[in-house]
Length: 180
Image (tube, rainbow, N blue to C red):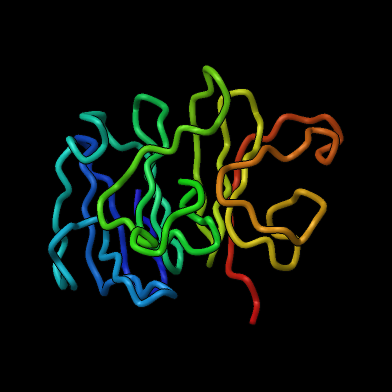
């Protein structure tokens, strides 16, 4: 699998390792969040992240947004990195000194026993699909992209009500850019 963000690319190898290359993500608060690497500002060739960056679990799927990235592991966990501005990483409200995470961090707010199947990153938001067919979203709520019935932003994944899907379970998610 390959995912392309605004200035970066991610690829998952057959052995479950994540490869990353491209320019750093420019975070709105001027903190750089380069491609999940702690010490690299720009990577012009693919570079692998150790499986230990994802709790030792193989990466199955990746998503790349304007200011953040996400990985879904074989353990059904969601890991994110990049700018925490607008809550798009799903890691909660972050103090200014930690407005960006350079290394992946596990997102744990998706309900008891939930396994993540997919994640999709938009400009400043993220969609997450769990094994129960439920969609969770977080980030900037402009234009109603979070699907919660408001324009409010959420800094942790928040479940979209099933009634909004006519009671149907969701099989796939995708995300896009917020228009300017």
